[in-house]
Length: 245
Image (cartoon, rainbow, N blue to C red):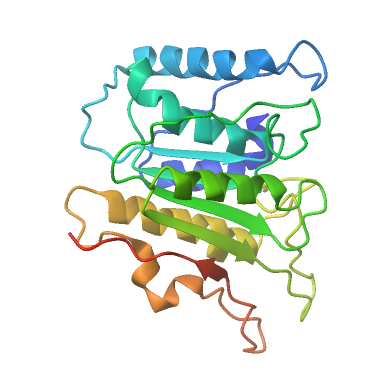
């Protein structure tokens, strides 16, 4: 439910964004079939677009973000939006993605990644993982990364957020990093990690922006400092250089 992400949602709205949070599954995670999740996702977005009267030719940047199973769905949206007549994303962020039905040996649970996706031209895609994520680890994230590379998404980054136990309370980069309510915590991993990174990408995707990508900025990996001045462990970013214009 969106309540566990309400800190991030409120932050985005305060910055001027319109946030659509599609309800794609029942309260019981194991009820029904996961095959319906993608259909439900697209149906929910269609209803939201009709209610908002927003169209694919809007000048505002379009950003799709997903966490865990939502990360798999976010990749699907980016690949399917054009054919569905939906706004195509300028920015894709998959945070600690997991639940990919057709990745590796697979578990029989979750949603499949698109086999031959057609991502929008100029898409800036980011895959974010936590170094202490023991729920989904990095297998699906690596599969998404390879898919982006295979489909020639030139502007992409693989970002690792690290735990830092220098102070109290400790910053733990587990599977709950994006959650701002229990079992997650609103802390520097949000403000200086996923929030700051996405904010910078949204600003860079604006029509009048002077940048093509945020990953040329040396400070983008900075995570701030503890109260005693000790730097918080910075992000680790693997970002292939985009081709010159």
